[in-house]
Amino acid sequence: MQDISLGLNLPSLIILISFVAAFASVMAVALPFVMRDSFASRLKSVAARREELRVKQQEQFQQRKRLLPTRQEGAMRAIINLFKMENLLQAKELRLQLQQAGWRHPSTPVRFIFARIAAPIVLLIGGYIYVTVALPEKSTEMHIGISLAAAAFGYISPNLWVKNTILKRQAALRRAFPDTLDLMVICVEAGMSIEAAFQKVTEEMAESAPELAEEVGITAAELAFLGDRRLAFENMATRTGLRGFKSLSTTLVQAEKYGTPIAVGLRTISLENREERMMAAEKKAASLPAKLTVPMIVFFLPVLFIVIIVPIVIKVSATF
Image (cartoon, rainbow, N blue to C red; front, top):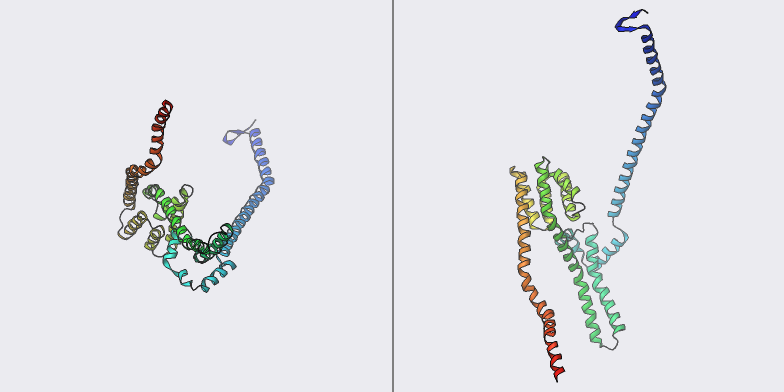
């Protein structure tokens, strides 16, 4: 056998050439199918992306459609105009209260003013019909008095409902605020911008504190679209109406204006809020004995007297 260069003999060279030729033949046959599959997968991904964009556009259209005035809203607005109360729709105080309650739909002021008009009328008529049917033996003055009382309750009930909703929402915000500040401190110290920190807080707090996540998410959106970042921070404090959010807004505005470290200010606010929560808990604990005095006198002492005196009375009566 004659040796070939590179240390290969003739049989080994023939085997190597045959292997390369067979591999090239297999690749020539299989490569079009592989490329076709890759092209098909790209077409499939493009189609999936197109379908996703179509769904998003449809959702945005449905959302814009929901924001358009409905026929019911037009009828409510006509009744409001009939009672000459259309100026209340533009009142800043009313819109601020509705925002603090978490009601931000454009038709919410119209529905609220309509409720203030309709509730007294409905309760007046319903109350009069009820007392007429249920209490026919009572006098007419009694029927009119009960009906007017029902109408007065219908007049103040929408305002009470809004105030109660505001208090509940503020309590939820106040309860989750220290944890949110701690998360923001971690995000800022990790190198995130304040916008990225707000987005992270919105994602992480969406399940545990949806009210706070909503407020922070709105602030993050305003930071992206408003030209004045200071206005976005002030809007957050105005929407919540809490002192803690006002302190946070002031800290962020000062950091934007003077370049002070944001993490230090956030950590200080978080510590102050936790101390305030501890002081509030201690205040409630200190006021508990005074609050328990009346229930003890009304409910516990009579039972205690009965338990002590009744056996003596039974024993004395048994002797006689």
